[in-house]
Image (cartoon, rainbow, N blue to C red; front, side, top):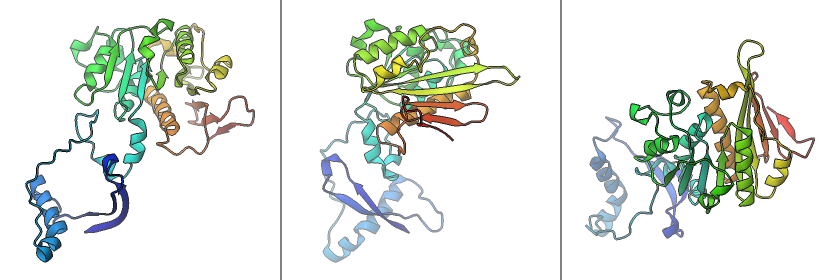
Length: 319
């Protein structure tokens, strides 16, 4: 039997009850239980056995519990979060209403990561149809029926059997979308045109919504592909000032290799990873040794340059 100390609150309804020990017990011969019933029977006998023998108590009360389990956005019960004892950290994300603006290569992977969080609602925005080239730069499978449907509808349907709270908005986001952003607590901007990004920035900054903008620049100067991935955090307090520094492209740049729908799914996924990691740091899920407003990752040497505060000349670190 494996036994170790623990400190796990049973839940918000029982905050005064804290588990102080956790243990695991499996059959010695087989190393596993035949089914869930055998597992429950074994644990009941181990835990309740002393009370049954000494006091005649019985765990078999056949009492019907009238307390309904807490509502979850997931279609399946997430048991591993409690087992890892990070329920308190996960709870920091559950009240978020997230917006993902743009479902191209990076936006699609970013959404795939976000649907695994307990965020109460995820609103996805994209006007473009889903084509074959999108299947090569997005997670998951491709059904022929998805071709020519809107990206927003395609990705919403892919996650309907996994969780609730994902809503599709088949539209181009600009200053006219104020109502669609009501209640949004955090946004992710994943567009590849500077002019489109500028309109989205105006909308989010005007409504006081903090957001992360992602970007990528690629080139082929020396044969193999090179370039940079970018993650920039526009906080509610500093967002307007950062916009003026033009850290994100706000005008359309001709002859950008990335806009040829180049198939670099791993870079899209990495860009999305960095954005979600930064968001979870902001929410206190991950440790944050140094605040970051601007992060760049170089494809060539896989170095990461972090600017904690962009107007501080001594803030850049490379690792």
